[in-house]
Image (cartoon, rainbow, N blue to C red; front, side, top):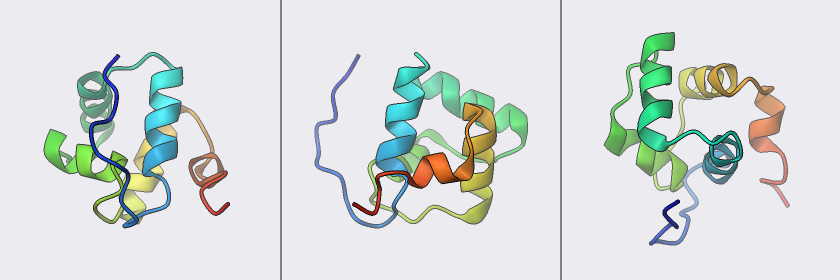
Length: 83
């Protein structure tokens, strides 16, 4: 499993948790992007990577689909983000 090469940004609150939850479920980034696309979210790998790295804002649509595909609540995406 690759480790992040750059530090996290501060453009969103969920990126780090999304990455953690995805990895806990053993899902590769490219496979997760494919699942998001099949679910109906139009997102490309670069945009998704920037979301996880917290270097761009996350839209409400992205938050909804990410939580849905991960099988977690939206609150789970924000847990520990504000601490």
